[in-house]
Length: 594
Image (tube, rainbow, N blue to C red; front, side, top):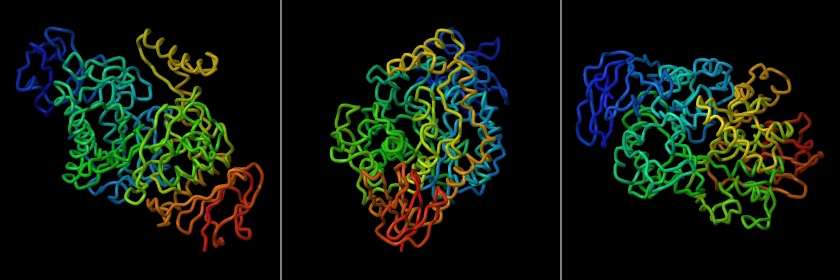
């Protein structure tokens, strides 16, 4: 949509009118099912479309829905923002996301106000922490005022409750002014249950493929060229008009496409071309359940061309080693299954820390299938995989949204943090994790339709009832108190019991940034030693050792070289002792060896 023209794709309509208040005006049909209307007044004009005399519907490419997802769209001119980031060359001085520290945040619970403007007030905290890239959970317009964002129905828009599109531009500008890159989480695999009018306009969905949410987005059936453009133009727009540095692509394994090139390949190639045009790196980070390195293989080599991908296997291995939980998909990560029959949880953790995936062509008991493919450690950098201890999914999809810090000791969380922050992978912190936030991150919605609110409420409670949870113990997603309970409490940051964890995270990130061997993504140089019975593990990064004692009692963890310096430790009692490091129970130290 240009500043003097409004267009819409409606190939099956006989007549399309633009609705401007009470006025309806005929639009002109053009090629390939596109309809246009010229001479729209400049400024923030509200408009909608009527197809064949029907009710007004919002624009499939709407940039702003100030009246909610069912109301008219409002024009937005992205060129009006006076950008201050002319010298910006991308995250990490132009190196991009790979190898950096990413920070995942949800706008609606990052602050009590739940707005982008309020979030700007805490960006300096992220700078002091050592963050390189802020990953913002989806901002696409969704039904209601509060939600996670994965039920968005207007991917081109910015949720009005967050401040709308102008506020997001200002947020990105504020991040860049502080040296922070911005990654936006986008959802191209489905739309939410209310306010989704795409099918009224054209064949945006197809029954050729199905997803957990119903018919798939149409990437390979009749009409798919325009649907593909709807997705790819959206991605390019965030880079060009909002100056974001990366996109996190939700559940790309549900982007069903049997055509050539695959939608991800086309997206990768067009983003690469735009990066050359803009003169800065533009990154694509996939959430993929496939455990297949083809996802991060360049398109020229037959891959999907993603810059990086989330790695849940590392999370699961850390979680099981620290908590002992083995239900559901955690079972294989305790070891002694077909995936790793001869080792326990520390053997599994060692494998993920050195070889990316546990399921890399091995049997997955949860999926009941052989799963994944091995990563070539010689040709693939560990930086192409994101490692983490917590994410919105791994916290929020628990019955009560409890963080790992609610289950394990501060020392055990310090162990987990040291292992992933000093691993060969790109690291990601979930908001509040760095100070061991007391607040949960619960699943919440604010749908206005009674039938939908009740369906979500019953579905959530029914899901966990099957796992033994009492209905009254599962928070009501529609209760405003559920969202309010999830809002970070920033006054905790300076409290001693939280400040100690924050200081430890800062020190770990400083080591990551300043030690070249730790900063490396070379998987061949990574080694892990462990003792399942004694419950200790040592991660080797060149001369640096991350020494962890997961046992309850104090112990001396043996090392292959003498210690010359203790770089960081959770407890004050950690010290070199003969051929090892003496640690308290549930303790960790980072040391430099000779």
